[in-house]
Image (tube, rainbow, N blue to C red):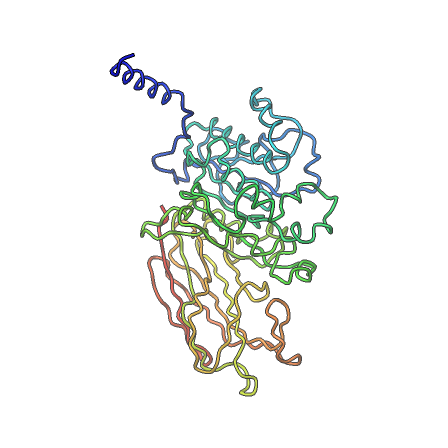
Length: 458
């Protein structure tokens, strides 16, 4: 074989190898965010008996939460119009019988998937593919997940099951009281939960880190084009989890387990139109883990995230204490700022008067600050951060501060067992959401700056 023949052979060999290389998943040129062509899929939470459930999995299902979603979104359900590009679907990942539309290959893949979350996630992914196929003009999917359904969805995304993430089919993800990064009780007190369900072992922090990714960090580039919002419950119920963990919680999950705490640049969410990288939105409601079902503010927030593209962030950027709230002998005052935010458009569109965000001292989530007289601090406490309902032009903000004397729960203030927590003042104001602004609030005890930023996120 002469030199030219060898060159020709080499070129042919390279060309042949290129032809047989397994193709990478296709990437959508531009992710779709149009609510009119986005299918909504609700993914339910944990059932202690779910692992042994009988019946059909991965097919259309209906439950109270699904009906709640349908009622507030006012979009067709799978029963009403399964081919609509914005219809609402729901499935169950529990069960022992595949749907009739599963192929032999689908059934084999399901049997070979790892038990628990890996198999549940595959079932949800296959259902998403199913609803997209039957609604041929749909361009994307909006996943709304509750509790364990959030961990299942996270597995689906980060493992790119059925290439839904890499093809940028999932463009929105709303999480209700999600087991986003694992569960404290499963990780630290699993003996109290022993024998309930093997699924609990897969809620452990170490399982999440080993089988999904570093549990507290948003670090997959597959999240890049997604709009993500966390809704966090903060009422600790009977207080058992508080006694065990000492941290704010909703009686089932720690508050901090329901959201990502950090992110890598590669995984930063789709940049807003001003070019700033974004973390997921975050909202709080003072209710228990299961009580979120009755918190209409959270459901209105889900609807807003599903139907709009304007993200408003309200931040307490500066605070000056004109008095400490304590006597001179007690020294610096121990202050906590709380806030409640309501939306006029949520009332008009969804009939919801409850706050979209209720970030209050009783839940233990707002931070504690020490203030001396005439001391200025820059708290940068986020009072609201999420997508607002379509057409929103203003938000109602109630902002108040308390000085703590005796509050061992969460804040560990043990200054005076006979003292009372003092209200330093309350402001009720209207914040415009048509553009950025800074509002100055003053009374005899404090001088505050509240900053509003408004971003179009796609």
